[in-house]
Amino acid sequence: MKKIIYSIFSIALISTLFYLGTSVIKAQIQKNDFQFPIAELGNCENENACKNYCDNPNNMSACIDFSVSKGLVSANEAAIGKKAIEKIKKGETPGGCKDKESCEKFCQNNTRDLQQCIAFAEEIGVPQEEIAQAKQIASALQKGAQLPGGCKGKQSCEAYCTDTVHIDECLSFAEIAQIIPAEEIAEAKKVAPFLKNGETPGKCKGKEECQNYCIDENHFDECLTFAEKAQLIPKEEIDLARKTGGKGPGGCKSKEACEAFCEIEENAKGCADFALEKQLISEDEAKMMVGGAGKIREGLEKIPPEMKGEVESCLNTIFNGELSKVMGNGKTITKGQGEKIGSCFESAAQNYAGKQQGGATSGGNIMQPPSKEQIENMMKGAPDSVKQEIQKNIEQKYKEEFEKNIPKNIPSGMMPRLPSNNTQIPDLEEIEKQIPKSAPQGAPCNSEAECRAMFGGGPPVGIPQ
Picture 1 (cartoon, helix red, strand yellow):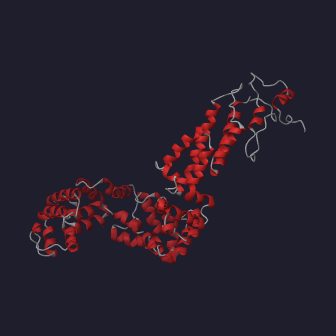
Picture 2 (cartoon, rainbow, N blue to C red; picture 1 turned 90 degrees about the vertical axis):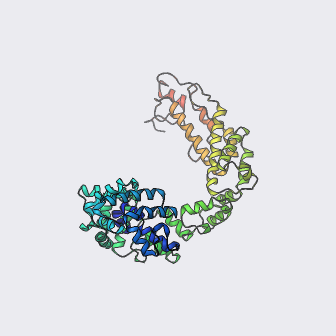
Picture 3 (cartoon, rainbow, N blue to C red; picture 1 turned 90 degrees about the horizontal axis):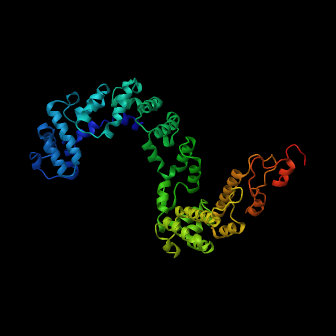
């Protein structure tokens, strides 16, 4: 709720006026323990004297220069502040305001004159991204949107929207004015019913308050149950959180933090042990993370020499140019790297198969498949995690070529038989025997009997077996 209210009234003009000198100087004098008197500020002898000095428009430029010299504000902020000073001297500020307090009162509690405040901010050079929300609100109001409960400014809107009874109305305005990202609006709508019924964890009433409550490990189960009920987190992440207790290796508490932690080489073994203990990975995957070099070495020794260069180049890219260290067991394989290794063998195997065939075709322009011996050789050299994918790709590619090139008017029931899905390696030589060596022009056969003799297969449609 606080974010909605802040978004409605966060007009950059107000923050800009902080850099006119008064508030910044006073705050920094308190924080940095400056020695009095301060010569640059009219030899002011205490905090109040310095504030009074900087409240005078004639002294504001000197106060800004002092702030820049002490690193209290940036050069860009100072330039904006000096433009604002010139406007103050000329009486060209919104509502004639002359300092932070009066400008804040005018712009934050007077939506009727919101356009005037926006125009002033643009004139003194406030970046567009800082006044974008104020413009969206002004546009929504011009189009007929009404502020929640008819509130007129920050104080009245804050009082209205702090009451969870009004959360739907306040969210609706934020959505119409597009002052909060759509994904946050969607999340807030999921939480709204629980807020109204007082069913949030610890009865928290805002995002920050709820985060502070749920960061306590003692509230983990309560907060996770709430996230599941409100559908704030995908089910697979809920299940993962329950398995891990909300913490990963090294105490990481988010997916991004855990991935970053486990991509560090010295953390790989600890991450593998943690994932194996929590049943997040198999023993084979854990072994790959810790002792994967041996598996890679074994795979490289078994594949045809023509494939080796391509596989090694691919692996070297995955390991950021340090394949030699990996192969020498001087570098641990992270989970992210391990997931990519199989693709190197798979891609090289496909390219190798294509080169072996050399684009050869038979009489009917039907692509000839790799021999069974070639397939078995490639499969034997690939890691276990890759074999199944190679098998599937070869079967699919051959099936597509086969269906694309056979004659289109073969009677139903006369198609050559393809291997069943549960065949480990297709008997491609047997399938090839069923394919015609040349595609005849016109009808492929003149009778059902001739078709059956030519193509094999079951009986024609309508003829019982």
